[in-house]
Length: 483
Length: 145
Image (cartoon, rainbow over all chains, first blue to last red; front, side, top):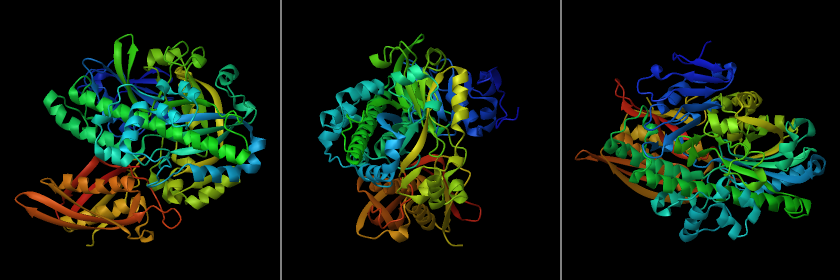
């Protein structure tokens, strides 16, 4: 098997591959990569190098993991999952990602394609007007420092208190949309300066707001879909992908600098400077954790304000309130985060970077409405090919620290994609295929062309066969907003 | 040879990488500044109604450029602006470099500006500022978008 690495990669199953500790000096545990053989063959060199670098970090338990949508990232690969002992292990901004709590949110509706199609242009225009996107966009929520401190501490709960959403929304978010332990005193003024005006904004890059349709023939698990509020009768749903914007990025950048110095003090060496880390229980580690939780809460709040605006846009177009349109939250889940979770080894600091929590049925961390079926997992594909709603499994809890894939994963650089197609041309092609796109930047649109990504269906099939998530429904795009 | 920059096709799949070069430290700093401005918006479509001056002092040139390029990202978010030009003055004294810079631009306007990437940060990945054997200054930068 020809791979983009000279390292020995052993087949564990058809969807699980292992690099033994003998392949790199300093590896404390083996590295495991999820994916079919063809996905593995297509993986870039960076994945193999980076997942084995992660396997060298102090206090790591069991395996350094990479999901099938993995590709090169800063420090950890995108798709990387690693769990560290609470007492002897580390925390690393490179294992969380710069966009702290970048995540996915899915909102259901009672509307059907037949009802929405005639007003799709109007709906997308209204959404584009109400949800700022792109370079330097500011949100409509005016904010001062004390208010932003409350956002950092309360997350989505702050939004509900201000009237941006419904109390029951909170039940359907990872950790109720509010991570404990947020400490605004550990966040720099620089980070606050970048974040204060951005609440309720999408950003750019691969972030988007998408109106999607769920057809009857694309439901794979009818009972679970029903539990998630998905009936599949050409039902309209709305997906949001964004995170903590410049705020989270600044938090990560600030603490990478802190950790570069701290590592010398603690005698920690890393294979890549972007894996800079500190012992979790050290002063620096706890400071970062407090600041990271602030950024994570700001991201939950960001997606909540966007949800409010989406409901307002639908209400304006269809003349019925969000409640009358059945616009309930299906779920909100982070895919760039570090959290303390309990496993047979004890309490572990689980890093997920471009990987989604995927707890199975029975988990006490799930809301009562999903406890019997498992956690919704929202996976965004490219804007041309569609997305998936999956459900977590016990196998994920057992094998991957309750984690699975997050999206499709890029295979082509942005610069290359832009050379292959113009944004206007792509917009026209997508319109002909029934997908209406509103974009702030045409070059940014070209960078997100479907051919720049892996085939999400193949990635989804591989996690299904590995047993770490199950398919519930496929979501087909009909409208997309990009920065 | 004039100072220049070019975006790279095969580096940093999900982000945006560029190489910048010039015959002097001043030139490579200017070329890298132009690349960051171009990554965010077409400077030709951006006015000059907003201005900020700043100063950085560093002993390490690479750290100085990193700080300077990060200023573009900070002000883009904090003031909601994009940039049409930047001016730089570099002085070396007693082993320390002082950069006095001015960023010039205007508030984001989707109707009049050609906007590109919402750059989230300058990263240390592959980041290297050096003078090659021919005396040409070069830097590789990966921007997180």
